[in-house]
Structures are given as C-alpha cells and as structure tokens.
Amino acid sequence: MTTKQDFSAGPLVGLRVLDIATMLAGPYGATLLGDLGADVIKLESHYGDESRHLGPERDGERSPFLSLNRSKRDIVLDLRREKAQAAFARLVKTTDILITNVREPALSKLGLNYEQVRAHRPDIIWIGVTAFGPDGPYAGRPGIDFLAQGYAGLLALNGEPKGEPVRLTVPLIDVMTSLLVSTAALAALRVREATGQGQRIEVSLLDALVHAQASGLGCYLTAGEVTPRTGNRSLYFAPSGVYPTKDGRNVVITTPSEKFFVKLCRALEVEWDKDPRFANIPQRQANEDELDRIIAERTRQFSRDELIAKLIAADVLTAPINSIEEVVQDPQIRHNEMIITTKHPKLGDLDVTGVPIKFYATPGKVQMPPPLQGQHTKELLLELGYSESEIVELITDDSAATPVEMEKLRSR
Image (cartoon, rainbow, N blue to C red; front, side, top):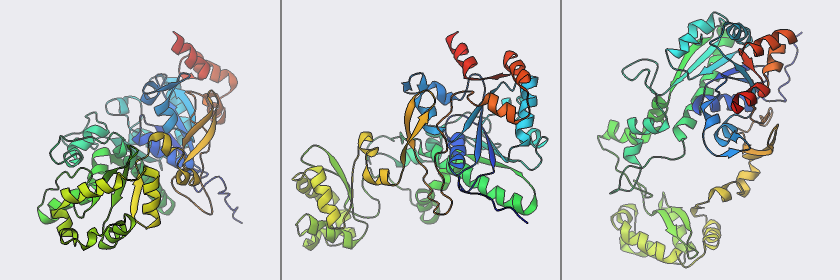
C-alpha cells in the first residue's frame, strides 16, 4: 500500500535543491523552488555569496542577499579542502537538483562540473547558469544582466526616440533567467520520474533575453523592420504614455483599441473621438504630439488619485506611477501576499517578497527567512551523519563554518 505524500508544505515537498550559485539568476530560481516546498540548501564559501557584500546594509546584513534568499538553509564549506569535499559528496547524494553559476576553471577545480557531481549522484539534475552559454565564442566570459541587455538588443530598443539607449535598472533579465532555472528543474524532474535519468541543463542570461525579445526581434525576422525606440509611447497605437497631474505626479494611460479611446474621452468629458485628427489609430498616431499635448492639458486639471479613480470608474486602462514606498503598501499587492513578514534570526521582523504562483490545493509559502551565513552548517552535517566531534574537527580545520566562525572572520 502506497503512503500518500503530504503536500501541505507545498507541491515540491520531499525534493532537495542544492544552491551553489551567487547573485541573482541561480539563487532566485532556487528560492522559488524553496517557496514551493523543496528543501533548498545554500552552500557558501567562507567569503559567501557576492550579494552578501553589496547594497544597503541593516545591522551587518546586506539587502540584496536578504531580498533573494528566503526559504533556504545555509551551510558553509570550503570546497578547496578535502574534508569539505567529503561532506559535499554526502550532501550531493541526498540532492535532487543542483544549481550553480561557478565558471570554469573554478567549476572543475571545486568538483562541481556535471560529471564530477554525477559521480556522487547518478540521477542528479544539474543546472548551470552562465551569461552567454557554456560553449561558443563568448563561453567563459564574465557577464551580468546589463551586458545581456546590450548583446540582445534591449538597450537599443529602450529609451526616448532621439535620446540615448537606457538600461533597465531592475535586473529583469536575471529574474527571467531564474524562472527558466525553476522551469527547467521541474521539466527535468518529470523526465527523471519516467526514465530514472537525471541530466545536465544549461541556462544563460543571453538566451533568456533573446527568448523575451520575441516581439522586438520578430519585427525584423518576419517583416525586415527594425523596431524603433518609442519612449513611453506604443509602437502600434495611440494615445499611450505617461501624463501629468496637477499635484506634480503622473499616471499611465494606454488605449490598445478604439473602445478604450472612446472610454478615455467619456471619462475626461471630451469629444476627441469625434475629431477627424483622432478618428482612428492611424490618424491618432499621425497626430500623436498634438493628442498628447491636449491629454496632458486635461489630466493636469486633476490630482493623481482623483484622475485614477475617474479613469478606473470608466474602465480605462490606467495606473499610477507608484513610488517604491507606495508599491509595498499597494492594496492589491498586499492582498496577493506579495509582501510578507518573516522572522529573521538577527534582524527580527523582515519583509520580503512573496510567492508569485498561487496553488489552491497545495499552496507554497515563504518557508523561512533568508539565512545567516553558515546558520545551518551544524544541523546539516548532523543530518548527513557527522558526529559532534567530527563537526568540531571540520570547523577547526576551516573546512566548514557556523555563524560564530563567520563573525570571528569578519572581525579580523
């Protein structure tokens, strides 16, 4: 008789993920798997994830790491040492999915390449994250989100028509790559369930952004047209843009069909839809400067919140341009539980982003706060069969570390 699996902690409960990646794309993919119930172990060196050394600080903990690494336990092992490699081998034997973005030659020197890891766990699902791909003309180069924006043409498309290219300041390419990491892991699990075989998987920032550029590249690939920069305007319809209000704020208004332009006119109590210059989308695009001028003139007669309420009541496509402070208080974002409070072992109450996938039968959740460096080293080594004295030996040898050792190291 089969025992029924308890999925109350999330749909991926019972799976173990080993996160040996740094910064964003790899770690955030592991985070989502953890939110969905997987036991995610973050393995760090004594130096730690690069995100522990960047950005705003709160009582010695850095915000980039805190923001990206919830739902994980943390172990510190120095994989350059033989005893740490032995502990790593034990850990891999218990692991279903390994995620890394360590580049060669360090990848192989630390025993982390696919074949080396597979020797410990033959059915491992091994996911490598790179900037440009594991082979080819750019293989081995360092890279981050900003470079992918350059190579994949996003910088060329973003900005004002007569201005300079503008980067996306939010690392959306890293985030998109993290979603591909989690998607790849789940697809590979299905294959393993059917065949018993794990496999190597490669995901890159460049491929993620080319995939996302389907519409921009598609204009060229299918019609030979190069998409121009349009600023806040739409390439395909008008009006669409950012408009001012009398309190010095702004709103987004967009009208992707005739019905929405009519709704906008009724909401603003104007009859622009009867003006031959604005009779249809081609005419509105031909007269977009004048249309934007008169819309701005009208929107300046209202406060932002007054205008938003008026437009929403008329079923117009509109949004405020929220400040970050407003985002975290937005009623829909709060209702969706996309900002939640965890209890950090050092910082106390800590707000982090929530789980973007809503399972109704087996919901995920933020399982635990982002860990201190080495917080679960002893706990995990005990789970792997190490005795108290062996753990002391590993720590004394600098093969492993707990938060106590990490504090000593930082104070040197």
